[in-house]
Amino acid sequence: MSQVRRAINFVQEFSIPLILGVIAGLIHANVAPESYQHMIHLDWTSIFGSSEAHAGGGGAHGVPYWKTVHFLINDIFMALFFGIAAKEITESVLPGGALNPPSKAVNPLLGTIGGIVGPAGFYLICVFILVTSPEQIGVASGVFGSTSPEHIIAGQHWSDATQLAANGWGIPTATDIALAWLFARLIFGNKGSAVGFLLLLAVADDAIGLVIIAVFYPSQTPEPVYMLLAVAGMAVAFGMRKFGVKNWHPYILIAGPLSWCGFYMSHLHPALALVPIVPFLPGPKVDTGLYEPAEDEEEEHHAHDALHSFEHDLKLFVDVGLFFFAWANAGVQLGGINIVTWIVLGSLIFGKTIGITFFSWLGTVLGFPLPDGMKIKHLVVASIIAGLGLTVALFVSGEAFKGPAGVEIMGAAKMGSLMTVIAGFLALGLGKIWGVKQDDGEGAPGDQDVSEAAH
Image 1 (tube, rainbow, N blue to C red):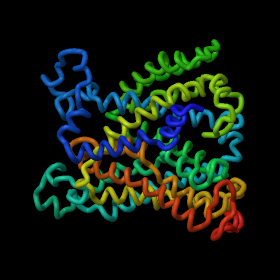
Image 2: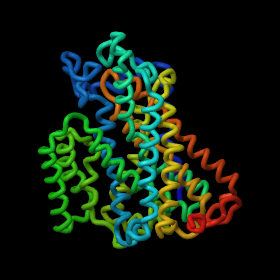
Image 3: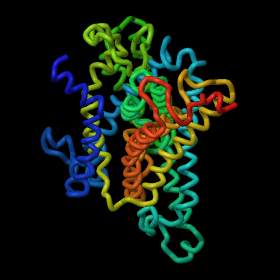
Image 4: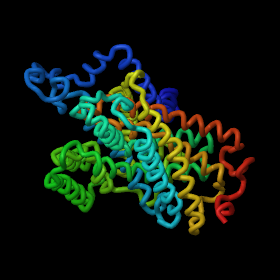
């Protein structure tokens, strides 16, 4: 392998562009906030000539949203990111995949349910107990309407603030697959059963996360009739598959835009447009497993089917592009930290850990054991790693809080999402303390099997 290829692999494996983008966004937003806002709301059409963007209304910065750099990144580029996530989900249900046969996926899927219910419940409970005024979430009282003492005494602002904060319940539900995989390998090695468990959980987690984004965070009031365009895109993709089209390009470049227009015009998030298209790409007869390294990379390169080729050809572009996604979404001012920051962070670390651990333990009680070799300590450490919610959590933060009242709370929620990197290092430390070793199930505390402990 050449030095250049090694360097590229290192950059991708350790999510370097994403991390650098987070750092760049934080520095830019705090050192030159006006410049940062100007750049992410820049009219990209102006590079092709004169623009009328500033002549009329439109977005909050005088530019229609569809003309902004933020739109290009979040609504168009991220369609490729979620398309690759859909590829992982599709591959997992194929013969030999992590979800096939379904019986071996029952316990991780129960853990996935816990990984949704736990953090969402933790978040809502904390919001309803702790958020009692607009000022707590960084929102001026007048934003909600009447500022008369009577309304404040009557608790009007309390209910409005709580309702606004509660809308972020979906933020802590997803897991960042790439970062989770990175920390899982550092702790459990390449072949530990906990790695497969965690990746299966993360993929299923993101599948549910896509549904949450589409259903609960539409950009405006949904107009479902336009989803017929997405159905047309699926029909085109189905026809291509029936006629034996082996290349991924027609699926993504013909059926994909049809689906994108359907999502966009329906006011569902267009970043999800490739999710119903990718499953039609011809896939392998047998899946070798998520993130399993190839024995012969050169041979694998020439043996790609359309499903693999789609990821193989676009993965580097998407990984590098995540720099710009992180830069455009992680630019929050440090002074904007408030109670929502800590609620998001706590939900992802404690809510995820408690939810996954309890539901997976419950699965063993019901007769659905964890993978061979996984013990209590492996389950707890894997559950903590699942609290890494960086990418999708940032994305949902931007969708959950909009409008004048949502700007400040959005920044606070994003800061909580960024802080979840703590979960990875917490898992590393706990793994060391408990003696978790790479590629085996030996250790100190918690050596008993979860199934034994359940009984």
